[in-house]
Image (cartoon, rainbow, N blue to C red):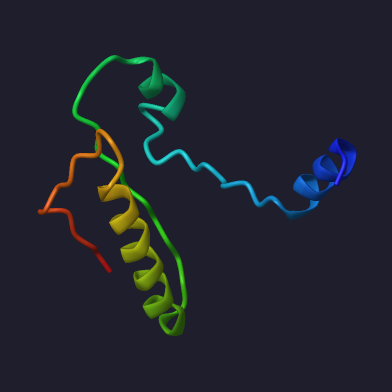
Length: 82
């Protein structure tokens, strides 16, 4: 596949995430400019009840991979909220 074909494929097949401001008082861009710690990550997933088991399985697989990455700090108190 040449570069043009690769670019066309990526344009057609890549699904980009949609960022939604969760706090109008402090936008993501303002937060990214700050040099503060710790960071709290909140992922919101909206799935039907029958898709939930598949999502949980994928999340567990991703978490297992992330735990092996250099610099990753595991927080055993993190949890799901339904």
